[in-house]
Length: 207
Image 1 (cartoon, rainbow, N blue to C red):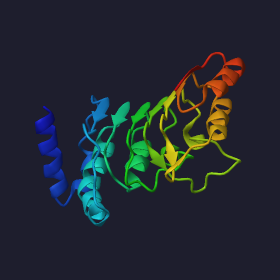
Image 2 (image 1 turned 30 degrees about the horizontal axis):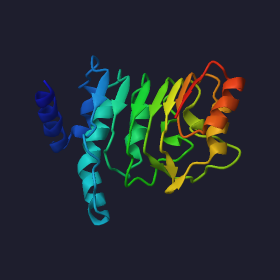
Image 3 (image 1 turned 120 degrees about the horizontal axis):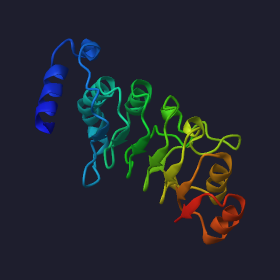
Image 4 (image 1 turned 90 degrees about the vertical axis):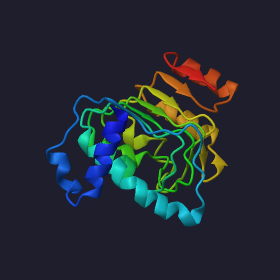
């Protein structure tokens, strides 16, 4: 079935009317999409634009024909095209879980989570070994502040921001500002986890 689905999607993308085909072609029964790779994708900078051009139409098309999608896994995928998450956030209103481990060659996914702000039902984010950027992130905000209203489970172990380790203050602030949080795996120190356990005993904190 996966092969047939892939062939069908590619065929539609190659036609001139693929942009409007989502109006008549919907796959309501698919709830999970796994596009992850077993190994990190290493792409030389000079080839990055070419790779994104080849990949983006497929990803955008999938987001538009899977309206009931609940979870997506893009682990080890390399892209610096912001429309990927914006499109899934916009077209998949039931999206509950996003997994994207080993974010590499990516300069657009910010700490604030703005690209997922339309995912109002998002409950789980798994982004270990990811490198984010801090544009528009400042002391008045906190991690994933634009998509945190329903968050219950978050894993950001070995997370970096512009190749720098994310501060303990930023991790602590996140825990204190997400009332729905119930499970958090990060690089919090034992001392800080003990402190937060006293404040938020309902949260399972791991490192």
